[in-house]
Length: 405
Length: 150
Image 1: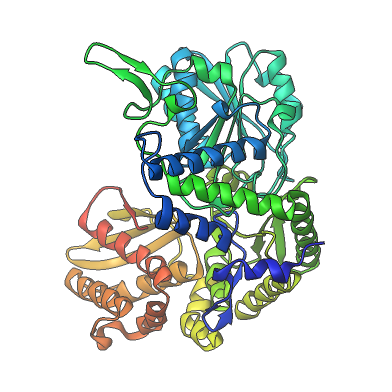
Image 2 (image 1 turned 180 degrees about the horizontal axis):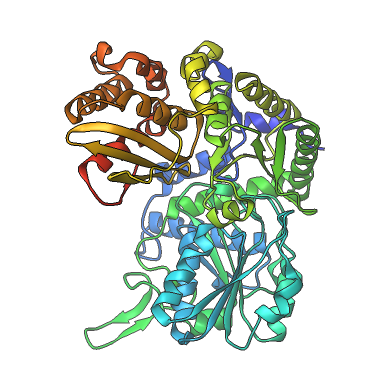
């Protein structure tokens, strides 16, 4: 059993008033808050250890390198990857997807080939593939979805063809909260030798991810959605695939030797980490993983699930409110529409009550088009949220209905 | 606390224009029109203007958006119908000043003063100005153009 009040003490930002009301932060799917353990790890690094990594024999550089590499090992352990060589630090999930698109898929993509994504992807898992398809004359194929907001896998087998060069799908939908059956999808794709990329940005903050069990070829996530800083994330790739891939960016740190005639690239994972990396960010990410594992990821997941179930029950019982995304398996996210009120107005009224929610298309415009709506209001939970904050959400909806009646 | 502020933003006139937008239709014989988009929130509208010499003989709009953007567009069509281009330009400037907290000519605004509450909500100023930018662009062009605010 988690002591939520004790946990909340670790998050200084939560203890403030917004518009004269205690802050209720329910926009965790957009970005999560950071515990003091993460903030201190970053500050301590800059206070005590700051230097460049993988260079120089001096003590600070060694300490910075050790801390940076220790974080890589934490990420490996967090995702149960086989080797540190399979973990590449990147800016976030978006950069990781672009890297895979350009470095893994592009060299083998020909006119007439196909890339398979789903209807519920975040723009970050749509646009890089569209750009690639335009470059190569390939076709973007889309797995359809149902009115409940689940993937419609009835035609999945037919969508996996001998022309499919990659299947790229989200683990958890940011707009709907749907947890997709990725293990089964990965297995089916692998039967046809199709590599699979999983966008885990919305999954890693909420559940245990075991990459050796999932057996996907690539997995990507952003740190800032899992209590770590912005500007840091990780790309996992199976070692044999990463070995074969050309570097994405050139520069320092990704080389073994350089002359004007020839450059020999560094080994994994450094081949993909050109330039000075976000060292403090990686250290903060490591601290966030320590923090989550210290509390127990299954405990965090259970508490969040309780919040989601309670919020769903309360809001379902209200007149004039429609929940968008009612999949059987969901995590953290509750998207809704209040009859006769545009979500943007909902967002302003909530903000006046100190309640932070996201309103808009959630960078998933095809999902909005599917439901025939311009936007939704979205509450998304983290483990530091409370049942009282669920009540604040319900009160907020009542307030909107009162104003707009 | 917040309720009073919210009532300043969501005044009765605004709620009424949101529920029953005026001049809310396509215009077949418009000689000026433009598309307006706010990609951040998905607001999208088209403003139609029928100019005869330098007088706005008719103005209408269509689209979807939040209460502030719909009401602002509706109020705009009421305010501009029958005005000259120069008068419309003056009103456009005053609406802007009102929302950014600058000194403005209240007599030119009339009913449009209900939009003044928006200035306390900086995140919403773009909702209120979308239709005005779109109208302005429509007047300057005799072909279809797009305006984006973000």
